[in-house]
Image 1 (cartoon, rainbow, N blue to C red):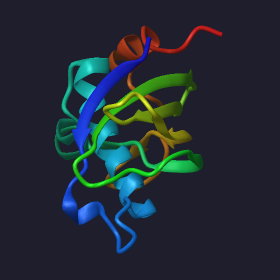
Image 2: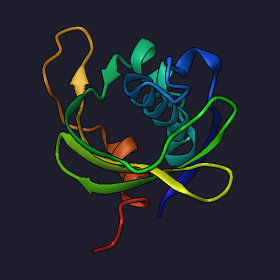
Image 3: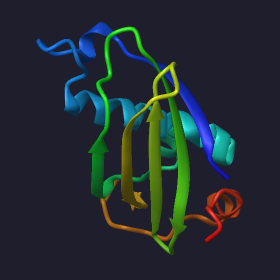
Image 4: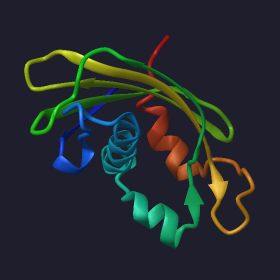
Length: 138
């Protein structure tokens, strides 16, 4: 089951062409990723990182930019878990602006790591239990 996160496009995201600069779109995706954790597992991402010392860095990404994102747009990010491995999570992002136009799609793979060693580790059972309920049925 997908979750939806709403975010606005700030002035600092815009380049000289008056569109969102592509690295800022990835930053927006990461903010949505962080906002998705309470919806997926009932835990804030800072708690995972700072207290539990878990991180989920991206190890692969593909994206398609479909339409301009501009200052003042309201982005609705639909985030779907596409896979749940022993140490990895697959994510799909679809960004729509306020008029319903799909502006960006991305597939990303993250790996669970110990933040102190940056070594990959198994996704903890409590997170796995909650995440399993959100993995897209194929």
